Amino acid sequence: MIKILKQVPFVAIAAVLIGISINMFFGPHKIASGGVSGMGILIEQAFGINRAIVVLVANVFLLIIAAFFLKRSIIVKTIIGSIMIPIALAFIPKIEVVQNPLLSVFFGSAILGAGVALLYKIEASTGGTTIPPIIFKKYFGIDQSIVLFISDAIIVVFNIFVFGMESFFYSIFALAISAIVINYITSGLNRKKAVLIMSENHLDEIKAKLLESVNRGMTVFPASGGYTGVEKEMLMVIMGNYEYHTTLNIVKSIDKTAFVISYNVAEVHGLGFSYKSIE
Image 1: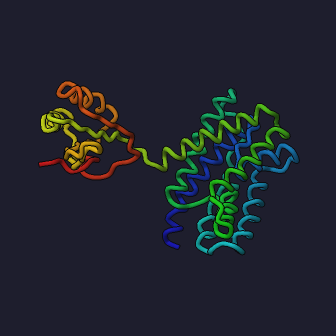
Image 2: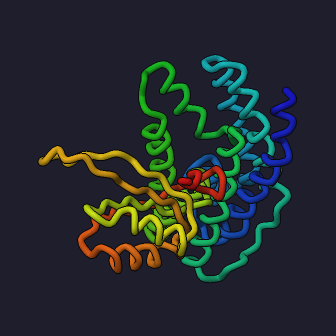
């Protein structure tokens, strides 16, 4: 309970972000990008029922269903978000911040993604369409992402009948941007590059030069050739993106035949954000 109470301010911030995206960016341009909030925009347009009421009723209905099929801990984690989202939708003004629909979709999706990612970070939920996937996963073994995709797809398709084809394509674009933002934030903002270096005769020289110029910690791994079976060493360096080209130029200046592999790392923790330096 103490942990859940500590989450309340963060859930409130996430609810405000989601409310802003719906009331100030998606709603004015008639774009329903999935979820219960998207359903609220559709029903408000079709039947004149306030979207906040639609979201509240849908969330309460889904929470009642969850009470029969899911653990109490899951229900408690979702009930706060289920209540705060419709409150945010009720109090945040419905105004058009951006006249251009494409810009509105872009910024609205980014704000929505930030709000949802914040909930993921603190292991909270807004309830709504996130509840059925948990139930299907528990009782039928169906992957949650599949059920969530289907439910969002149904809401997105209804854009065609309520708002028209243009809103349908905008809603797909909004879903894609939100997914990218959520993935980027939840997988880590402290992104770096990992560089693997192999050199037949100059690895020690490369290592010394990198320690002098780039000043990043590094690790040496034993390796062996898959064809020759010859024992070798491989150097791994973690660095910022701005240091990558400097590193590559150093390696090429010492050994043009050196084998270099680089890849992006989502997040790095530790001394100097890297591995401990070799003494």
